[in-house]
Length: 335
Image 1 (cartoon, helix red, strand yellow):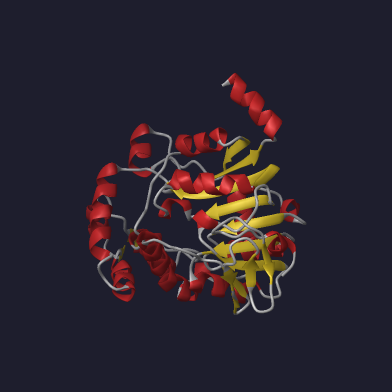
Image 2 (image 1 turned 60 degrees about the vertical axis):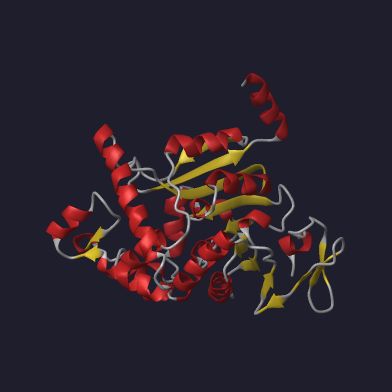
């Protein structure tokens, strides 16, 4: 294992991890981390809530290829550049960390663009799928680890992305703060989180989430298929109280299976926090980032529409550049 893998830290004691005869081991505490199926396994001490989220997504990641939009194709590079709003040449030669890589879609895209990618996820299915689909695509290293116990030293990466992950942890801000130190001064952080919207709909959706999480993943997935609603009158009656999708909105990119997976993603995890643009922008600024940019198009401007749908329509992508320590100190004194 080369590159970033040569600078691994033990997630239990922060000691230096090196390759031994049969596994990676910590020089300080003696913890051993095996390599299975080409993936370094460094998950330790997950609590009950973390295991629930991992297991919910494990089902999804093992079945993702059923959805056309989620399949791995060369088009993903264009989709990624559209989401992050950066030029194609930006990623060439960068060392990138994909925190919560899922099925490896963005890891695949960034590696295709010339980045050296370290892809991390807590789930077995996620790291196995990412390992499989990125083989032969640039330079990708896959590690199984928890977001709150990442095995990296500070300022190790030029670019860190966590797309659709932070809001599924017990504390979105705490998760954000856990990954910001990994960005080098002058490097960039890009996150996507769910957006705050109609509180009545949020309340109804949360009530349904409590019920659905009692079902098996398979039964929950089938039920989410029923929430892709063909009858427009039924959809109009439900849209204000629960998360659902009208079949009339389906397109070549948003096919029925992709919509079903999106709903499963919404209803399955223990945590599903919602945030506003100003709130997330403030996190970046408090952690010493400038050039903070919302890369998701703003869809709604009228106050009532923003109340109902959020500014971006459900999710927010934001990117910022980390300042050097001297510049952060100056800003801190001014503030």
